Image (cartoon, rainbow, N blue to C red):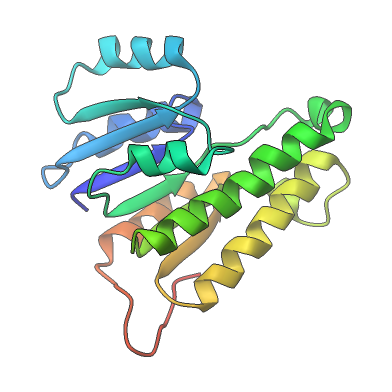
Length: 183
């Protein structure tokens, strides 16, 4: 992978992922996409790597995702509202980010011919009992539907993230004529 975009890239996972991806010799550009300009500034100061590019935007706004693309080969979609208690207080906000945000990323992948994408999900999407889990489950369903149409679109819960990232991005698999997928 030469150019990777991480949505929600300033979060805990995004920070750890940035550290690991910057170790790769074949990484040409790593685009950190988030709506938190303070965290972007802190990451820029911390990593000080010319391959990093920071883009201010929100997955709720499809146009801002499109503006972040710069010949991107793959997307890691880690952006989400995650605080369980807040999900039940602000369900509309969680739906906009965790469901409509997923839809926006998927549409951008299709329109921009991006064939590799990884959705970071949660164990709370299994038999959800709260708004957070329900919105993550719905996002997973959208992602699986896209995966059936072709490309390497994978879903991974946080506990299995590093293994899945390895399989999705290092495998070299691309969309084939018979549209097999990794899932």
